[in-house]
Image (cartoon, rainbow, N blue to C red; front, side, top):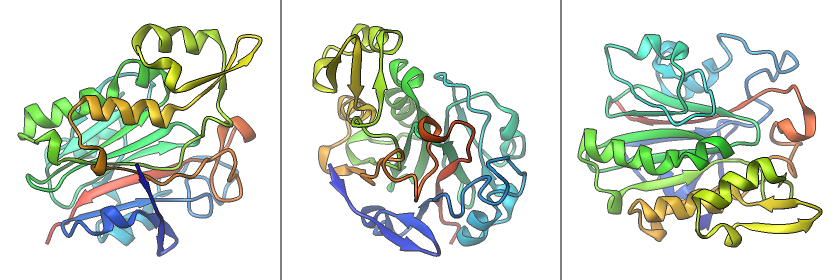
Length: 252
């Protein structure tokens, strides 16, 4: 897993994704996140700066109503305007000039890129969605609907809480242990029924199991809880704003 960052227009990007000519992506920070100027309260125009940076109108930056489930929606020219009310935790599209994004403040954001078709995906992988294997399902949906070859797909993890800060107990570890035979490789016991859980590593392994090559899985490598100066963290702050992890196939 490779790490790296590059700042452009106050957004953080990964050099490995910047190198893909037909793709634009960005991870926002708390300085330009949702609710950055109004105590974490969502505003309909909260992502206008991202849309402007992507060179699209705000209505073509698509998010969904995230519910910590396994639903994945396909975004196209007919339905993109209605997506903000859709209850889902993953989006996929092959339409050029439509950006898809996931809002987070500790949960794991995953961007998926098929540079050949081309097609892209954005996945919200909190622990509940992870247990439901949402990243594997997103890869499979891109394979089934767009003909994407997992071995040529690229994935990127945005800012998320790291295992040093993500302490969980039995209600989380029980489902993790039931669904992942390798659970002991991604969780460290802290005693008294507490565990440090590495959600990014868990989802990385799921991507490899879905057919992605290890060299094609990248990570920002930054913990939202440790870097609360740079990112929002629900664990640290409670009610707070959100960052956006967005990806788009360029129109031109």
